[in-house]
Structures are given as C-alpha cells and as structure tokens.
Amino acid sequence: QLQLVESGGGVVQPGRSLRLSCTASGFTFSTYGMDWVRQAPGKGLEWVALIWNDGINKFYADSVKGRFTISRDNSKNTLYLQMNSLRAEDTAVYYCARDVDGGFDMWGQGTMVTVSS
Amino acid sequence: SSELTQDPAVSVALGQTVRITCQGDSLRTYSASWYQQKPGQAPVLVISAKNNRPSGIPDRFSGSSSGNTASLTITGAQAEDEADYYCNSRDTSGNRLWVFGGGTKLTVL
Image (cartoon, rainbow over all chains, first blue to last red; front, side):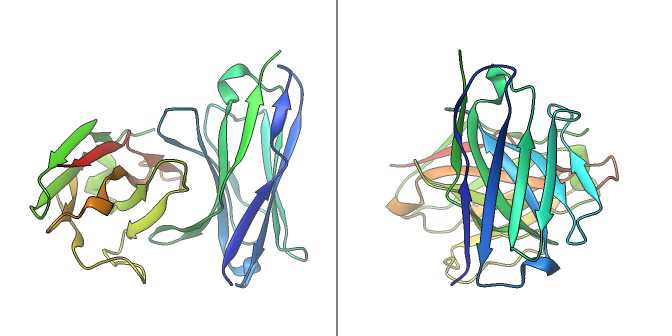
C-alpha cells in the first residue's frame, strides 16, 4: 500500500549531526519529487527541503541552507535528510512528503528530532 | 520569500458553513493547496492546488481563490472537521520553493 515511513529521529546535542530516512512503498518513487517538512512543538508547518525525482535539483529553506542536505537513493526507494550543526530551533517533528504539482499528496507519520544538551 | 497569512482561529456551528482564508502575494501567481491536521497526526491533503479533492475527502470541502486570497470552504461542518488547517503554495521567488500559512484552528461548536 502507499506508504512513507520516516526513521532516524532522536535526541542530539547542539552542534551535532543526525540523518533522517524516509522509505517509500506502493508507488514508483523515482518519478516523484520529495520534500521534508517540519513542525516545531505547538507550531505550524515549515517547509525544509525539496529534491526533484532526478536527485540532482535540490532546494532548501533559508533556515537550514548550508547545514542540511537532502538526498535520495531511487534504487532503495529512500529519501534522506542529513542534518549538521543542529540547533535548538531545529527541534521538531520531521515529515517526508510526496511532491506533486498540486501539493503534498502523501505524508509519513513523522519522526521527532530534539536538539538539547 | 513570500508569506501566507491565515486567521489563527475560526469557529463554526455544527452543520453550518465556514470559510477559512489564506492571503499572500504568491497566490496571485500560484494556486493554494489545503491540509487538515488533527492532534498527533500527520497533515492530510484536502484540496489540491488544482482544486481537486483527493480520494476519500468528503465533497463538503471545496476551494476557491480571488486575487491574493485563497479560501477553503466547508459546507455543513461536522464534528470530525475540527482540526488545524494549513494553506500552501509555491514561493514567488521562482525557485519552486514552498511556503505554508501559519494555520487556522477550526472549532466546531
């Protein structure tokens, strides 16, 4: 069935790194752009990054540019988010989402990232 | 980058009609999509930027737009529609970035 499953969240100290994964199933992963969207506790949704289906074109929110890297492995149906130099303000639930021309039509259940000393 | 503005909270009586709005310069160029999020759950697309309802979304949900304002209308609101609603559109930078509104908390009375 159509599914996105995130993993890799946890508690990490400021300045450290973490890599999130999102495994897709039930659709042809390689034909879709994919995004990461985050939501800080009690706050709204914030778009983080987008990668086109070719894995070459990538875009980032200004708040994470230079620290986060989005990538994908189409042979493994997996999306990644490498997060470096983490800050307290990066604490959030991170969702992966399938990007279609009309919006985000599929979302994972989310993985929580807590940046704290 | 552009911004999308939503009212923080809106209420509606059970069975009545409610409109949730989203304003922003990017909406003059790009259409908005709408998402419903219930506590502890991931967002769900309820209206696409092509003004389509995904499979499983009740037909009481509809979208419209005019100028710099997009609207989500729920005709005959039900108790299960109580949730946070977010609008979303492309950013006007032209780099195919996305931007979300701040969200509207809908209370069904």
